[in-house]
Length: 206
Image: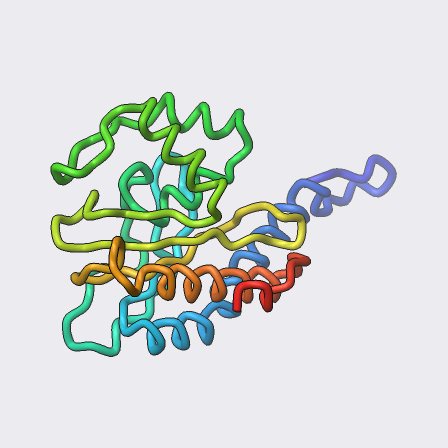
């Protein structure tokens, strides 16, 4: 709040205004993402998740269940680690260097499966590769029988504000369908980003 010295009245300051705008944009992107998530789930027959970074964890903010009877058990509002999920890696890889270093220094690389990355040097290398190729992989690193592919969602300034992923109890990585899955996830993330005002042509991913 800011006080007018002449009238003695209080009003919302610029900081509060900016915080309000951030909150509204976050609410918008969840609604904007819904039809693209539904379309993606139908195309790949897998569960689709939408998540944001929350300090050193991720939070699922939306989900579209797999059209198949067998899907991934997760809930909106649930938290998950950043270092061994495709969503977490997609969010981490595109953070500013200072913020990335802070998170890397603070997180504990807990092993969830035999495939979990537990070395910070290996994680940094993985994040560099993720940023270079534009998508992230979870190769049974968080759950033994689940593989995931994730891609970042950007706002009008090019900041990564969320990530989108497909998850399922069947192999997607190192299969003949891997390129198709990656293309579909990246295309959906690019379309959502374009709706958020990010200037990139999603047709390039077709």
